[in-house]
Length: 389
Image (cartoon, rainbow, N blue to C red; front, side, top):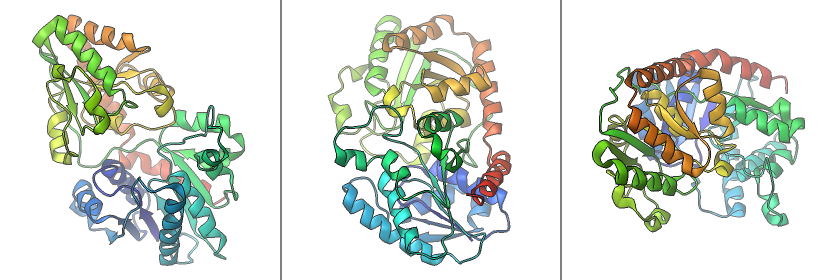
């Protein structure tokens, strides 16, 4: 049996990733029993996302998730109890495998402790969407150091555990910082969710619409997006529009100049249907991420851009630069903050429809490379490698 669990996110967050990952697993192992454990609301949305045929082949199980919020110690003991419960559900068959589709530092340590008390533990894969403390400067206080991902990955060994990161560039950076873990860290390109996406390519007509997707956080570059919106609309008026398709947290209320936005951040999380309706008319998706936060994190927004054939205007961070280098022209990269406005202005001034169409067609090729059926072969090989660890 393959047991997959989303123990952190309780609603729509990570539904597209989990849908793409489940489709990849099912394509790789069509005859294996496949069970998914998650929060009730998450299960409901995930079943819709994967489609009736795939949903019918999965055993769905409801759990009480452990969303962000509790302190490290409380999270650890709650996660330990849940992991012990899940391990008990798996048979002792050599092909059994447990997969956590997201994991915080406390989750990693809880998994290791749970396995200590079992004479025969199944193989474990944990998807790491963020790796705080793995690369660069760590926080000095011993308590904070103990609670970061660097410590979690190094304590108690990693026998029988395989960590998955969602871009090769992220793996390269992690292995550069922790070379002794090279055999336990592998990359699987972020899979595209099934039953999502389009083949329609918009014409680059005015108004040219630029979108910021997801939660309007400083770490995601929301204030910089607003600043660019003000500069461009002041100069070009209705020739350009700026839309936020996502939720506005408390911190976003203190960002000034939002009157320049054609679509304001929503007061509550959007349904997937509303999110897609907001994305559909956009020409470009802007990823103005702060380098520190996203140097070791994959971007679900990038996958939305790929699925819906929306060229990107993105900050130069290693993960995004590697994708441009591999696939070619899928939009524009910018360096410092002032360069974002300059890039957007060039797009508005030139309105190069031929180049825009080529960029969208390149994104179609990227999407094919991240289709679950395409990734199934890679995933089977990763599972074969994990058995030797």
